[in-house]
Amino acid sequence: MVAEKGTDHTNQEQEYDVLKSTQTVIHKALDKLGYPEEVYELLKEPLRLLTVKIPVRMDDGSVKIFTGYRAQHNDAVGPTKGGIRFHPDVTEKEVKALSIWMSLKCGIVDLPYGGGKGGIVCDPRNMSFRELERLSRGYVRAISQIVGPTKDIPAPDVFTNSQIMAWMMDEYSRMDEFNSPGFITGKPLVLGGSHGRDSATAKGVTIVIHEAAKKRGIDVKGARVVVQGFGNAGSYLAKFMHDAGAKVVGISDAYGALYDPDGLDIDYLLDRRDSFGTVTKLFKNTITNKELLELECDILVPAAIENQITEDNAHDIKAKIVVEAANGPTTMGATQILTERGILLVPDVLASSGGVTVSYFEWVQNNQGYYWSEEEVEEKLEKILIKAFNNIYDTAQTRRVDMRLAAYMVGVRKMAEASRFRGWI
View 1: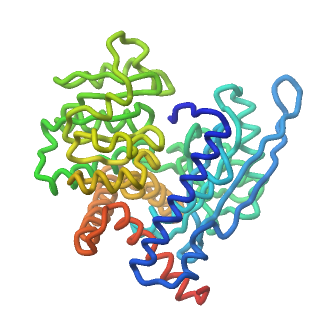
View 2: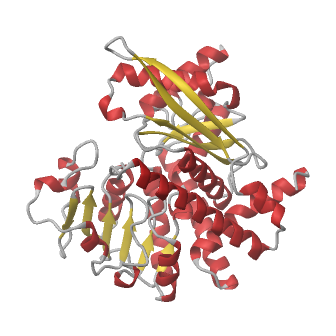
């Protein structure tokens, strides 16, 4: 889960920066690939953005009006795909930027999708179970004309889960008068969900960590790993690395960080954490998030929020490999500093693409009506991500660019080519 951010004004400025920096790297990637300016003009913003108002009858009898968004970045390759987040800080610019990132992720792992993203401005932590159900169903009714198994396939994101996906699928199926499991992914297994979906993002990060470690000659068994963030992705990741024989020497949540040079007892911490990924409150000897990022380690994984490694602290990072499990944890300036220092940076659009890959598997299984075992899912995921990692690593080496720009070049090419063949540009 993400930590709470500052004021609305600060948050809007941050989100604007996220959109602008994403557009800057896309522009640079297209330029490197030799595409004309009109391709950038087409891809710099979503093709469509729907803003909706959702009236919800609250438990006290009052009616509250919520604002929701659904952005569809580019559907030249195929239907759009992306999560729905419930969060008080959701903004139009954030949803736009995240839909572009989803397009890039789909291009990187070669899925037949464009990117989409949705969000509702709300705080689900202050809402009852029934209020959340009404809001979820209301959102589906509001966006129903632009979504569907062949148009735009939603999924879980921040503060949404398989139960919310189940309500949304049920509402869409009622409206469609036809059972439509392929309308949405991240569902419970009994309603057509896929094995491995809950841990897919962390599993994907684990796979690219192993590949990055090979490139740097590091044995994961015994490697010192620091994970910033202990929510869904961070906690699964800490567990996977621990089980692989790595020493997880540091973890953090929104309230502080824990450090033990001999390795933390991850199973104990997982047992004690609450539903929001908080565990450090139970300990007296904590360190700050800033100190955590600057720990001596082999692999650093920012898995919390954006803008954690900046020009201010990039020179103090002591890891040999940085793998971005969160969205946008490293600024563009910091990316350049880390690359110049010889630190291998695996960018978010590659590292966190395991989630959308297994969502794609779920959609395929729904369309076929044939379901795979967990072993099949993991095997297919590993094959796709190893290929994607090596493609980006080789692009970075041959083009002499950093891994982030290489990832954007790989991710944007499929969209640009599909748009060209369609005659849009």
